[in-house]
Length: 293
Image (cartoon, rainbow, N blue to C red; front, side, top):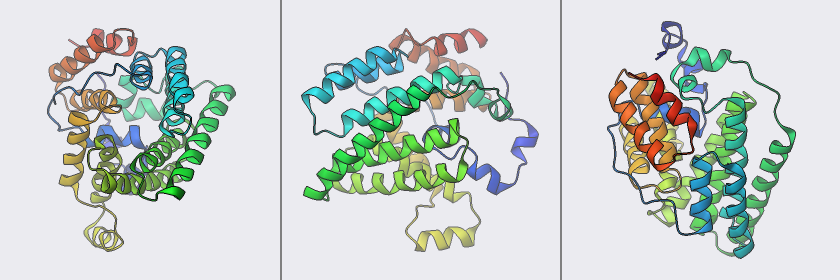
């Protein structure tokens, strides 16, 4: 297993803070010391659940089919196209090798990897679904500014745009701005409905990442309303991993990455085994398990 190089650990703080500052890239940093958590409820029983189950199995065509069923039955629900956008971005992540666990566990391998050209059809599908979800969310928010589902959709789409900007386009400033939006909408969604546990992900990332800045900057950001409490950030990330729903399997994957980065090979392996049993078609889990001893 390749761990973070000394050069990466001693990089300037500003560079380390902005590197991969997106939902997926930042999450692994937040979960390095997090213990194994209980599984969330199974993803089954509705087209939306079935779509996410297929997505985590890397069965993207099936996922799009289920999300399409949900959108047909619920044309005004912004979560349908937001979820379908997730199908597109995960498809591109998989095609480009972004989801390779060893890449996340080794900063040098991640930044120096070679990539094929972006698939324009996948990018267009992603952008179309993002725009569709944002439009539906905006319509809902015009009727009810406290619509928690609409606010959550805005958080999800902003988070995925941050992921695309950072992990595919490698535009760190753009990723940072989208991450700020994701955190803002997530806080509003949680204020409207505290049981939207998946929304804690973005708020936890904000608290943890901004807590790494120097004390005077933390004070200024706190006065401006930004969350800068590291312990609170970790608590919220644990809550998402344990009680979240659609994002819980992804959080568990990042938890496994954190365990491997921190040298706890066996605990990381056990998490991957659990994910592999739950999502048996996901060869990423199986391949990484085979590398561990």
